[in-house]
Structures are given as structure tokens and as C-alpha cells.
Image (cartoon, rainbow, N blue to C red; front, side, top):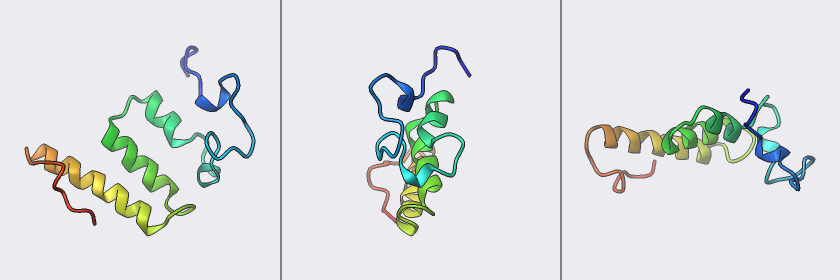
Length: 91
């Protein structure tokens, strides 16, 4: 890990235990939270959302979260084809 990289949950003043903002229960089974992975790897907005929603689906909103992940993949496909990403239908 980069010595200058700080996890959001470890910044001064942030709570570390049972905090729904910095330590949500739906990511508890993972070594690192999706946000940490996304930021460290400098992932794009669309890819970060695919990862976030896919990782939390089993512990939070199930099929709804998977639909959200799919919607970001559909928008990315539209973007690659040169189409509008605004008009892509939600699953």
C-alpha cells in the first residue's frame, strides 16, 4: 500500500466501529471495502459502481443491487458504441 494512502475510515475523527458510513455491515465479509479498492486502483465511475453494487448485493438489496450493476454495464456498452448513456433503460 502506498504510504500516503489513507482509508477513509481511518482518518482522524471518523468512527471505526459499527459505523454505517465508514464500516457498513454489507461489506463486513471483505478484507477491504469497495471504496478502498476503487480509489486505490483509480477505477472509473461506472466500473466502481459495478463493483460496489455487485459486492453488496447478497448482504443488502439483492436483485435490486444486481440490476443497478447491470445498468452501469449497459451504459458503458452504449458509451463504447457511441450512443447516449442517458437513455439506456434500467433493467
